[in-house]
Image 1: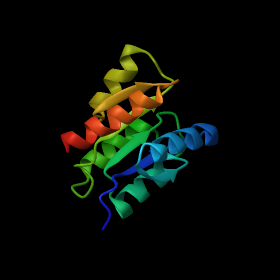
Image 2: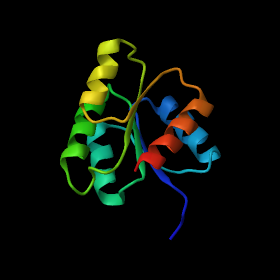
Image 3: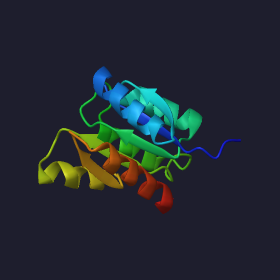
Image 4: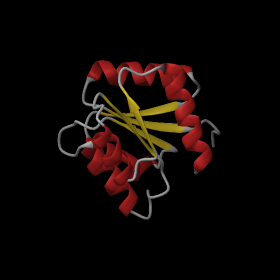
Length: 125
């Protein structure tokens, strides 16, 4: 069994998904990818990642719904969720936290900041 933390990244924008995956892998994380919220939920249940990084605006299940679904399932309720989004209003951040997210990161994001926030989420587990 590997000690490398696994991060599930969910974003329907392929370019963003590629960039986030590349940055997290370069930071030493194993990455599982999902292109929508429903796929992310299924992968989270199956693989039990150490952290989930999700966009908000996605088809089938948005990032808020994903965070709520993960929180409500005892099998995944311990997984920290970080919302990574272009939404930047105070209400968006409040809704993310109300949905169960542990952090809120605005796009465009700093790769160093994202790495630090994932590491902080891992320490809170």
